[in-house]
Image (cartoon, rainbow, N blue to C red):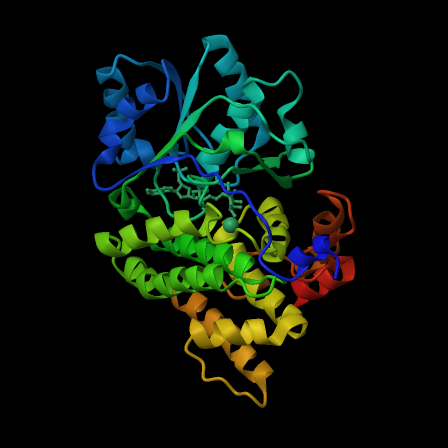
Length: 399
Ligand code: NZQ
Ligand code: ZN
């Protein structure tokens, strides 16, 4: 074996840099101004969504906190779930006109991703969409976040996902420059979420864990175990949070698990999958469904389709996470039981289980599969665990 081949089989070489300063706990949002100042902000754009942060009184607290620190600010609300490019352009123009030097995102993954896109676009001479077509983000205005929903993990990630309205393409970009300088995580802020949105978040967090668990790298026990611990936490705490929106402890556990699931601490040194996400993004782009709901429909289908690629890996998660008894003679039975357990769990927290329940249409399958395989990097394929072509993706949508 050549030295260079080594990493194909065992834990890959990696670098890991996650410089976000996390401020966790009840009422910490009143310190937003302090942290903006600490990270160099003097003129801030407060970016927020469709109304929840206004209604809960959170925005007023943020405004007071900035005023108390003598920080000037302007505001841009109206970020929709599955955030759109048109508002990003508006934000970029506003930042330039107002000489903004810091962006504070108050909301969920959509608001944070929109803030990241604005942050990158404001200091770039070209069209910000270049970044969503493969260009790496190496420069951006600093951003901070006040998180209101545990789901996307954008509060600790260098990723951003935006939908281009023309053609309804949903695309992602990444870059160290996009990692938030600080993120305030107050679990109590998520208590105003409807049960459905809480469940969508739980599903997304589980998906971020599965996308990393499904690896072709051998002997990555430390990250396997970290992922399993986070999955077990979600399976225990998720239903409690869905049943009782005021249960602070479950929301606290879920909030930190959501960050850990996606800042890549448990994804380093191993190949990752992201098939379910790529296939789902076309659904939320076309039907504007919640990302988590789309994943609930897609994940069991993808896993069933890919089962034969590595039966033992699916059996491992079935045994260690879902408590299925190992059938050594028929490991595929064990593996399938694990997928069924996931399906039952998602149903129990109120997630859709098929195309019809999601509002997706069978006649769109050809278009969805084509966009998934050719819209982004134009390779004609998708998936890190198993390389899938357009026909495979069509078969998965049909499943
Ligand atoms: O707009 P408002 O009124 O705030 O309502 C939001 C929205 O309708 C509501 N909400 C949020 N916090 C609330 C609340 N309602 C009541 N009380 C609260 N405390 O919840 C709805 C969903 O919000 P959104 O921000 O869209 O949710 P999420 O955090 O799940 O973000 C989804 C987006 O993130 C992308 C997804 O594709 C999707 O566009 N992702 C981003 C990733 C990243 N940047 O690393 C990775 C993920 O895999 C994901 O793809
Ligand atoms: Zn996700």
